Length: 244
Ligand code: NAI
Image (cartoon, rainbow, N blue to C red; front, side, top):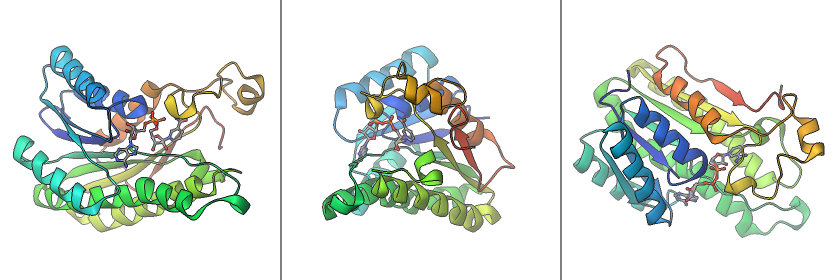
């Protein structure tokens, strides 16, 4: 069902985003990879998709927090790929700290990338979905947005905000046959969680399935939602049971 479609993935050069790009490409989708800084890694992901799956792949440097930059980038993607059928808002950052000591910048930076970034992308890609009378949007939230997390007031607020954004967009675009869902990962082994060891007994003890997840397990859930035509406004946890 994704064969011949065009998927855009933000933060697609590494971690969960790179796994999502590869998964969607494995299902036959062309892929546009948006990355913040590391061109070499973005190119590596694109090369893998071209050589392994024979799909078209391109990368675009863009700060998703910047409304104008996103507009220009989406325009370039349209020139290169013609349209957008699947949008995965995966780009995200953390600036952890206790709320009593959190700086203003740490709060707004996280909201700007994680929440406004997804809005910016949806805002500029919506015309494709409406014109195509179909398509799917998947936003990467977090269990922090469901449960809250001490030390992550900014991050949890942004990820909870993404759930509200997801459900509103799902309602707005449903008449156009467009779905919008969220995936809420728990602890996944990537650069973002470097230092939190999978061998850590305290952490493993908190997770009912007893281990951290891997990016491919999140990517499978994203692909499932991207292909589902009758699921919208859903939040799918991929968390080993931690937030049940
Ligand atoms: P990561 O740090 O490895 O990757 C984040 C990606 O976002 C990078 O490619 C980075 O370049 C990109 N990015 C950051 N700021 C950007 C900006 N302003 N513009 C464009 N791209 C930007 O992180 P990871 O772990 O792969 O996380 C991916 C998503 O999954 C994030 O939204 C994160 O919040 C979420 N998540 C991760 C969990 C984990 O345990 N690793 C758990 C729950 C959610």
